Length: 247
Ligand SMILES: [Fe+2]
Image 1: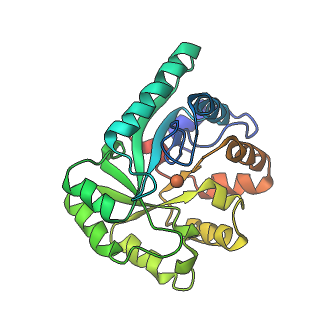
Image 2: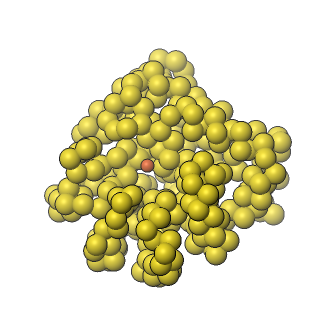
Image 3: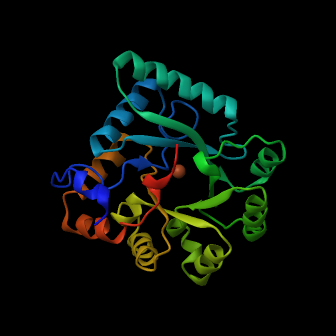
């Protein structure tokens, strides 16, 4: 038990065991997450209710579908911030992105248009249909530039399940893993849940994120927190780095 644990309120699982959200789509109107400011405010309220105190927003940056830039992301953030301020809702928010590994991303790197996490973590993702063919080279390049890549929801890339040694290889290459809370709680396919727990048990999970896109996700998380399995998760994930990020 750490020194700070004695100050932690024990309140029967009504709040999450970490207070920093590292993966969510709550900025209004710039990806497939929140469609408008009112929904974004609701999502922030839901997160507060779950015990989240700091949010890193990770809007999609994807070639053709969501070609966001620091400007589009900051613009959406400003709208949310003024709505939150108008309602007196306190929340610490840092804007970043979830970068699909594609040509558009390579271009954003080249032109210095990245919006990393605090401490220069950078959230990257594969397509759900196929892995990015030069992922190792890209991880290496990002590290050379001083970033620490975090692969978003590695457990959801089912094409990796046939060759699970790829996880160990990427991890050894210096890529950290962020597993989705929704995977651990069984929101997606059973095999995705199984892989998420395997990675957690193998000590390969550095971050847990909600990947929250809508209110339904928040409700699912809240329900899962009432289960006995959630207790196990809290125990197994005690060393995740979410709260350690310095804003
Ligand atoms: Fe996401």
